Image 1 (cartoon, rainbow, N blue to C red):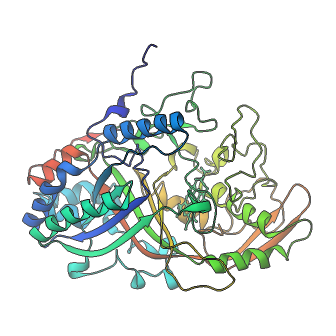
Image 2 (cartoon, rainbow, N blue to C red):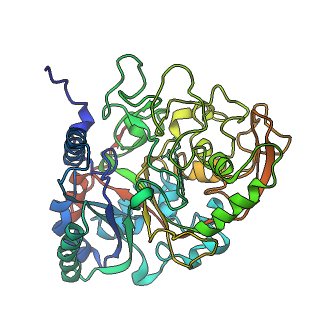
Amino acid sequence: MEQLPQPKLRTSTDIQGNILAAFNKDFMDFRYLHFPDAAKGRGWLSAILNTVATTSETEDFNEQFSVARRAFGRDPGITVVRCGVSLTFEGLTTVAKDPAQVRSDLEKPFPSFVAGAAARAADLGDTGDSDPKQWLFGAGTGDQVVHAVLIVAADTDELLQEKLKNLDAVEAANQVVRVHVDEGRTLTGALKGHEHFGYKDGISQPGVKDFHRENPDQPGFRDVHPGTELIEAGEFVFGQKSEAGDRTAPRWMANGSLQVVRRLRQDVAGWNAAVVEGATKFTGTMDPTRLGGCLVGRFKDGTPLAPPNGTVTGVGSDRNDFDYSNDPAGEHTPWVAHIRRTHPRVFAGIGDGHPKSHRLMRRGIPYGVQFPGGADDDGVDRGLMFVCYGTSLEEQFELVQRFWANSDTFPPGKPNGPTPAPNGFDKVIGLAGEASIGLADGTHGTVDMPRFVRTTGALYAFTPSISTLRLLAGGEDLPNTPVGS
Ligand code: HEM
């Protein structure tokens, strides 16, 4: 059979793994590290450089894995460990040869990155019990300032532990301070592939031009993934063309990406009880399963509430072949639903005309043991290590969290809203308060829920290309002529 040429970014050995090609591992540790000085930071970077995964090798493995799974009908016994490294603004200015240049390269175009997640907390709703004062990382001072985030991802716990032992030695040799560690672990049994509230996660992701193949029968969409739009690669990786031409960056950022890490603790007992209680406040046909589905936009097995948009048809619970154009009033997928708030599809351009400039490449994984069930909170710390990549914090993660999830009047000029009340907040990640729902069968009501997700750590970091990591590790000049568009 004739082999089609690979899309150009698919074979990149410069873009780190996990940005375009997901690590997709069951065991993922996050180490938040502080360098005592420039020389030791560079020493640590030099020592880990060879273990940092590339896009090409990450995707090769993923393809091999899917082929083997199709052939044997179960997960094949192939295993690997992968590393990814990112640097915060403080980390970059610690190791860079010319910190003043890095500051002036970043200050104007990347204000949120330079300020850091803790400084952005008030605008993003990280207040009350999500206040940075209580964070486990991301708001420390002195030797608790995080310089690097190291992700170590493995298919088995043995592989992970073996790798961590080597990394311990590299940290010790360079007197690197470990500020905090998070252990991301996929859930098991019936909850495999689900997050702690019980909903299937990791379904809808942007398709990326020049990385994913286009469907020959439906230009603009990813092949074999009905409903997955192809987005310009510059939305996720610097140096490439972006959707609105607003993503230029200094050359040393080319093939790199901005990373958001948020440690989001989930109160599962609280959520379960609120959904049961909330369902009793509705007029019409409502039960906890339906209400939970309305708040997420998908039922627990992933099945979307949205009817297909008629042009393509997906199959199974992972269906993604909808764009809400047939549901302007939110009578199938309410406007408060988490997946509609964070990706309103055809309604995304309301207010700015750039519908494709606000997508996130999500790479999260749960942490903490599964909730055992029952009505009472067991006090165990569990939640989601939310990770996403993109080329603008302001237009992507922050816009989604601040102006979509945390705004009770989103979307502005709501088309034919189901009830006279404002839509309310995203009840998964938004502020405490009301969410109103009015469905096509006449069922309607309002839920008033506190927050069951709180932020317990957060960081903004930059995931450099392998070639820029090498320049940083060698204490060399960083070329800064503008690239991308
Ligand atoms: C503990 C916190 C969170 C939980 C429990 C959660 C849960 C979920 C679930 C169950 C889905 C549907 C599965 C899928 O399409 O992949 C989803 C999708 C999504 N979530 Fe979250 N999420 C959380 C945090 C966040 C945050 C902080 C953001 C961004 C600010 C976010 C943005 C998204 C986006 C963009 C989608 C895809 C929507 C689509 O394309 O249809 N999530 N989330």
